Length: 232
Image (tube, rainbow, N blue to C red; front, side, top):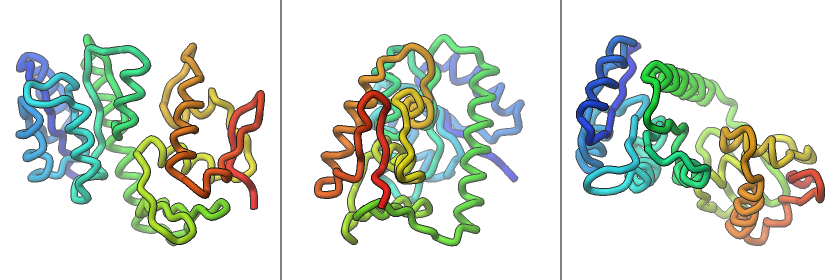
């Protein structure tokens, strides 16, 4: 099956290097030099993965990523961000707006190709599971989470969550009663390992509770250990 990539990168030397190597890995590749043209290319070709530079001439990669996730026709596209910014907070912001992965410049091209391939494979597997899913809804207290449609309902009412909030909630309610350490949450939700300030987790759990409103009590703090979804 044909796999497609759209590269949104205004540095032509970088774009050409990526184009050559991705085509050598049997991807069909299209490029754009700004966010507006990139979004047109994505909506036209429906790629498996978008390689998205953070610093674009017309808008930031964050804004492009938000636009992708807000458009139901392309929302399930994989997004791998390319950026010269390597700080943890920059990576977290990228994941917060819905990026799936993050590569810091200067990068090793082979690593980028491997990450694009792995992301395309993960998304293909997820779509295959969704097509055969029984539609089982995950529940914790008043919260209902549909892993196929990504709908979240609280007391039957549809609730909008940010992509990172959804990932965090999905992990916690996947095993009600299980305590997830902050380190586990960083690794499984943010894909971050090593010496990173776990305060990040506390901040996002607090935001998730605000978004959950009356159902916030479902997310419990286990002092000295981490967080869990309340078991019914």
